[in-house]
Image (cartoon, rainbow, N blue to C red; front, side):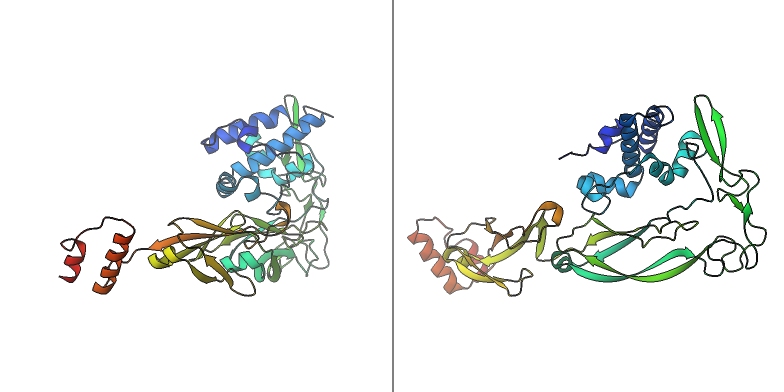
Length: 373
């Protein structure tokens, strides 16, 4: 099984590197492994894609924070596993504006243009779920505003009865070639803004863009065991494609609300149990609702110590498919509550108990005299 490298290691920067340092490091690697400089070199191509994936995460403050906290699982393509880029064209498609920023010109490579079908943009939705929902799984209906192909002009951008014509500047490519030293770069056509076409009479409904913004209701299945920082990919629910291209994807980022009774450690469910001194000494039985069909009955053994943990195997949080099968454990963390005040009769019993077990306690001029005196 191949282990993905740390993004900081890929860009050869420290974890405390600034945004400018990350950008400079990526620029150096992008130039070094650029496909036009390494034609046919598969190793260079993989390093080019690897560097692009690292930069895509570390240049985004929110993604970088999730990576620092959760590693690759926090920023992976579907929430549970890495995605990366399929080929170098995916890199240029995704990083058009970034390459303009890095290289001071167009997308960084001469590519065919404006009239070809292109995938629609991806969308992000931040979703909060309760702790119980994260353990059991659920289904949520969310409303997404997104760009869809204009129904009036069928996405052409031109008014009814008219058609777009090929841009005379770029000849329909959407880009114009720029030569600089060893490289040939492509810059977005200034006349058609990369569309490859010119519209003399724009559609009145979409103002020539070919898109309209509409809200859609989408049902999202939340798998049992999901955690904060994970994301779900809903294929085809992003923005509409361009020139007949496929729609983008919707990425649902999960935030799990805190629970007053539980916390999680990976897929273990940790329950904080408070018991009294007598229960700790003599033992007791407790009932714990750990999101099963019935509350679980647990025996607390006599003589349990404060802070001691009891482990019930297989009664925790369901494991996501990537992490195996079954459930984690239920961990009961015992906290013994010491009463601040007791009555006179209880005090006498406690003193008698202390004498029986040979423990030295304060005399009547101490703590209890202050309470009952």
